Image (cartoon, rainbow, N blue to C red; front, side):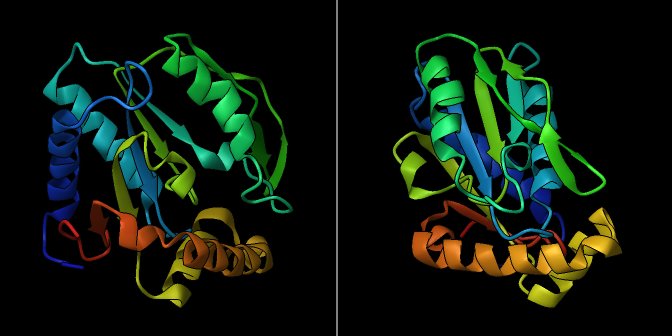
Length: 202
């Protein structure tokens, strides 16, 4: 994983280039999955990617959906069927998705208002387990974002969410490690990024 300067922008540009050369996988929608361990900067990268995509073509509709709104501490990965039924299936049929999500308040997930996702040209799905094998045939590009040091990732996540959640975040980190080992996500990625040092295509 190259950690040279400017790699966040290089990986974003490479993502859009790859996406343009691959067919849409959700009906009319081109899908980008941004996956990797917690505390690595997936959301920051996804936001940069969305901004770059919109800047490159202001007629293009680009949406970002974060999987944190689906997960809970107790069930970090068991929401995929809901994502398929409420988001992927409608979008593939050319209809808006209506996703039942959680709102995180003081580190506690609570039922929130449904998230309505109009049919976009590009959908960026970002979060832990976004790039699982179940979506491999429909994702145009899979980007793996990882700060290599687990202790540093945990400190970054704690800085983001609060010291009171360190125990929950450490348990989450162990759970995601098992998930990624079973899914072999990093090895399947089209592009890989370490945003603390920047990075290049895999």
